[in-house]
Image (tube, rainbow, N blue to C red; front, top):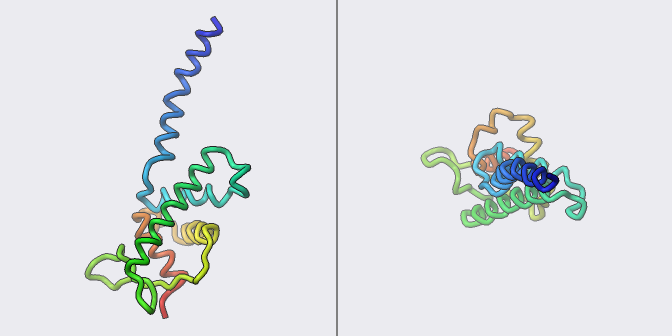
Length: 140
């Protein structure tokens, strides 16, 4: 009887676990996806004390930020970075990041910008980051 209860409980929990696992491994596409991952990451005081799902969100956020910055460096100009994500045929957004910028500082920018501009969460994550950086660190 105990074995039956354990199997039944495991059967109930498996779909929920699989669903949560899928969310943690799905790519960040929208600004809302990025905000979710980075706001959870920002709440973690130390990686050692964080639960597994919180660490996974931190990795999702920071991996996305790393990839975005690497792609942006490709188009870096002496005056700043013009984003490869800027819409074609429109004015290019330009930003000049400081020489040192931590993941925690970038996560804070993402959360603060979302608080001040909630309509921006309908954007693609890359477009959102361009806006965040251009608003915070505009080119001269």
